[in-house]
Length: 357
Length: 275
Ligand SMILES: Nc1ncnc2c1ncn2[C@@H]1O[C@H](COP(=O)(O)OP(=O)(O)O)[C@@H](O)[C@H]1O
Ligand SMILES: [Mg+2]
Image (cartoon, helix red, strand yellow):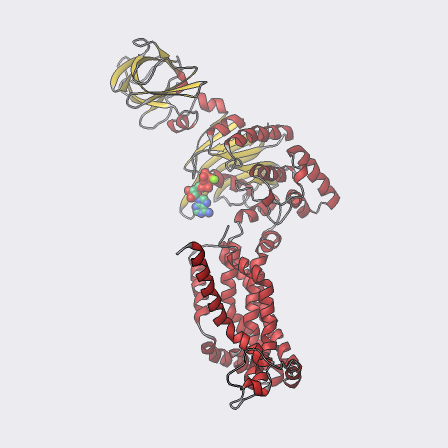
């Protein structure tokens, strides 16, 4: 598959502030790529650089094989959906949709036809004559999407398009955007700070922190083999537990430090005495009868949604445990815990990188 | 004190204050249509017994007011055009670029605003006469007014531009427009109200301008109505009704504009602040 968007060694400075650091990114044609990371990590900056709204300071940016470093936005043929939707308030929905076509010089009848076609897809047909101020948040979102779709651009760029919607509508629009993407065979780059959105919608997830790409890959790759503690903690909800430990003297075990020391055998080798951080996802810890299991600890808190149960164990640091169904243990009880075999992630405590192997 | 009675009291105070402010205006109109003897009657009458409506036509004719008003209009329109064309661009730049130089520029602009016309008129007069601009006295006055009122306009219109989200412009750029195109297609229509209101305020200022016109326009046939009114009032004047008629003819159009557009003017001035 060919790369639709290619960034090599891209850097971006705002004055002295280094906003993007050595970005290497290749976005496959037809893929749905999510840029995800905490607020202020440079996601919008990267997206705006793709659109041409920011100029990159160094490196190369290619769209559909052409170098676009200094090309103005209007010649890049990408469409962008803004967080605020940025609908033109003095134009009707139809005029908003067809604005780009009007600039291109498309004839009026043809513009109308295109607007009707897109509106039929996105369910805006009855709203074409309205002004943006007369629409609900969800409808505005649809107009913003439609305005991008009508252009058949080389790539769709989304900057947190769902963050102004309520939770239920957000889940709904998530599916709708992904369905539209598949239907159009488009190439999409989607910025979000919500890892659930990124994991559920994207084929390729790019995790950023402080202007650096920490890791990229398919959602399950990131979940199964996080490259460092940051990625491990960012992906998954509730967040991964991190437990301090040191490598055992035999080189095939670790000594967990949860208030009291606990030796656990490993199916792999570690350096004796090495300071480690053990990552364990809450869903990979199983409850056992008291006195059984790898370790035993008092339960601090039980929270249940009916279908799912969230336990917090009174260890230092606290351990969270998640499982489906109801909990027999109650706050104050002691419970035994087992770790799902092979579910332990080993990180160097110093560098926070995943241990090889 | 209950809410109702407090509201009534405030309303009464407001009416009294408005009355005090509006009394001179009322007195102007009422004196205009009084006869010569009624004008000096003691105690003064508050409603003329024998309104002299023909006085408007007489004054218009005898003082050749058509020419004066025409000159005022020409000067005001000229000043509004110069200020709008130059000021809109200036305000846009000041609204979109934030850095230390823009702040310094804004400070200088505001400083210009506090200098009074009577202080500025001498250096402007000398400068204009040296480059020969005084041979085109109305143009000279237009330029002087433009220099004087530009800061006011720029500050108002800048606020309007700042209320137009930058993302709209960016959306237009991504949609395929150029910066200039995005400005004319998106920003300008959205800032139209604010610009219109500011232009009307400038027009009203320029229409009544006196200091520059008085000192730079010697030829009577080029003088605006404000200077004409001034020369009407000699040291021994007693034809107050005629003078008041002149003033009434002069200000009524401005008042009418203001009353007709006051909704828009007020909303235009606050549109940046709200929302
Ligand atoms: N125009 C700008 N000038 C200076 N700094 C900026 C500018 N835009 C963004 N930044 C900084 O760059 C960093 C990344 O911003 P952004 O890409 O918007 O983050 P996010 O990941 O939340 O979208 C932030 O620290 C922000 O303060
Ligand atoms: Mg952002």
